[in-house]
Image (tube, rainbow, N blue to C red; front, side, top):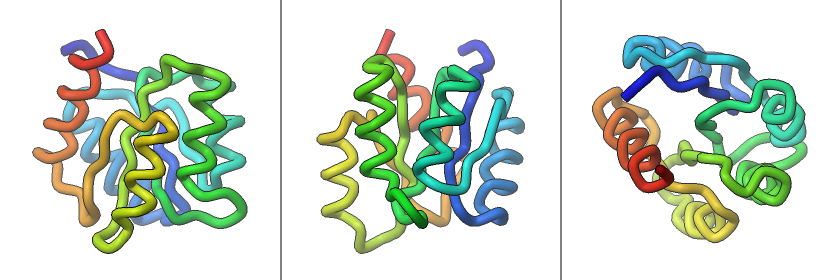
Length: 124
């Protein structure tokens, strides 16, 4: 698989740094980050990424709403939700909103890589 342009959306700077290291280690390019759902929509417009990793719980607009807005404007967007245990309802809502998959926190590189492969293969 060729390198993907990835947008990371998470309100935790530590999570953003960890995801950046993982994604770059997998050969991908992080083209932007956002800390809120509203910033995610703007960052998507500005960077036109191949893939988004989207936290579910964020201030101002959660990942479910941000996903719905991005998919509403960019129907081919590929979004992977990043979630904690106990957020099953929000994961289902995210998938209903158009997310292509999810990974659980703490994110492990191999799980992230597997989900990216599945999402890219499914959408080609």
